[in-house]
Image (cartoon, rainbow, N blue to C red; front, side, top):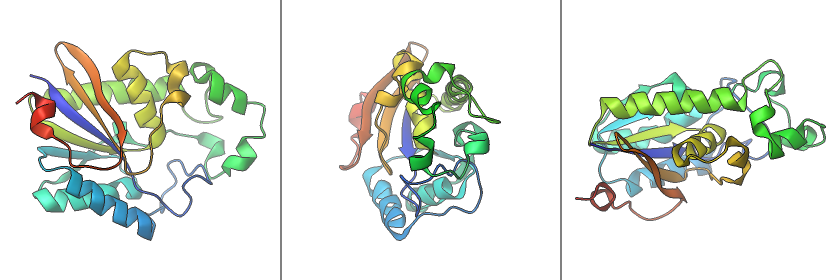
Length: 206
C-alpha cells in the first residue's frame, strides 16, 4: 500500500530570504511564521504520523498539527536542513557575489558546501529517510516537516528528474508538497500548495 507523504516547509523566521541559517540552533518562527503554522494545521484533516527535522523552526511549525490531531511529533535527522558548513549564517546577498554561486544555481550536482554537505548527499539522505518512513506507515498519511533545500532535493528524487533541476523547484514557507511512496515507485501528486484543505481521501484514492 502506498504511503501519502506531506512534505511541509517550516513557516517564516526573522531571517527568511536574507540569511543562510543552516543548522545553527536558536532560530525560531516569527509571529507570521506562527500564524502560518496554525494555518497549515487547518489544511490537514487527517494525519497518522508526524515527523520533523530536529531544528526549532520545523518543530514549531509541526506543533499545531500535532495538537489538533493528538499525534506526537517524531524527530528524524533525515529531515534536517542542509549542512552549509562555513557558509552557515552568511547573508544571501553576499553569497550571491561569490564565483561558486553560479555552480550552486546551475550545477548543484557538482557542489559541496565548504566544510559541509553536498547536494548529492542531501538528496540521498532525504530519499533514504523518506523510503524508511514510508515503510513504517503503509497506507497511512504522514507529515514530514523540513526545510526548503531538502524538500527541493526530495522532489527531484521523487520525480526522477536530474538534481541539476533542483533550483527550478519552488518550495515556499509553510507550503505543502504531496507525494506517494510505495512498491510501485514514487510520485509527486502536488507541489508547493499554500491554501485549501487537502482532499486526503481523494489523494489516497478512497
